[in-house]
Length: 424
Ligand code: DOR
Ligand code: ZN
Image (tube, rainbow, N blue to C red; front, side):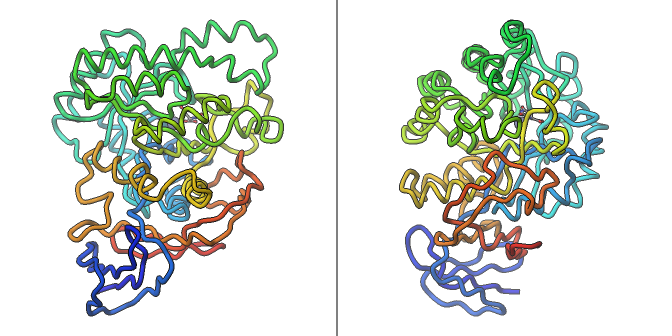
């Protein structure tokens, strides 16, 4: 089956793109033969978004999300590959638990990889997986603090061993950089905390401290440090100063870029997330990080919880909110506003992740590459209405927000999904 995407805007030019089965076989101005045509005049064609940071939860927490709901949400958001995080029940800390996840993930509509959790005790298990069957493992995931995860790592010796493994197998260590002991210290000052104290409890110093330590460990060991959801100006600065070594990478989320404490009076615990949403000055520092090339990737940190859980008081409400259906829309809106250019968006949402995590033939619209593609309409207006989300987590700190630039079609390995308002 030959599918022609006709008259798409690709790298600023009007082109035709031919897909045969799972592959892109032609891009250019000629009109090749085809069996089916998609009239795409005026629409931009992007490589499908690769999201390294997704909590699918289809293991012990299906009431929050499963692979069907998560992958439908991904498709709605133009995301063709997700990396599933390991803080499940049971956590992905060894081969039997990875096998259980593999079984669940078979129903996914999008491509997937797994991030393996590292703990104080599972070095032999992680080593065994990397040596025997690393094919679907994208990265190691290291938490320096608890955050909807029980397991966090403490002690530089343990961390260094995993970074040695990272260097040997050329596999990134995705790090949640907040340090638990630091949070424990700050939380004592808030006997009756509310969401307005979240940023002071999980104090910025706690993230900065962890990032500093991990940069040092990456320098010493040669392992690959990938800072997840970077939230502060100080971390952007430090990572920028150390980037030229080639083994230090920086992910940001749309919420740390676009939201700050001003959203809390309306969003309340829906905006409770770890690391916390910071300040307007941090938003600006993240923008500067994009402009200077310090930021490598966007991740959604799609972290679904039940709405009823999020409506509890601050202490009991879990951290995290859904992001698969909002990320690309929010970023396209920034392109329309002139704050982000399309080439940078493509690099940060797809191309760079493919190269950091070694996804072959993905992340570019190019002959010979896999047909993971996202077709977007830069004139399509949207309003965030969480009760229409595909994810099971039907709430959002962006509720009611409007913008322009949206996904109209997501193509996963040559399979076309039209993004309609009601369902896919
Ligand atoms: O807010 C968060 N939620 N941050 C994390 O690091 C974990 C996530 C979750 O799994 O709920
Ligand atoms: Zn996360």
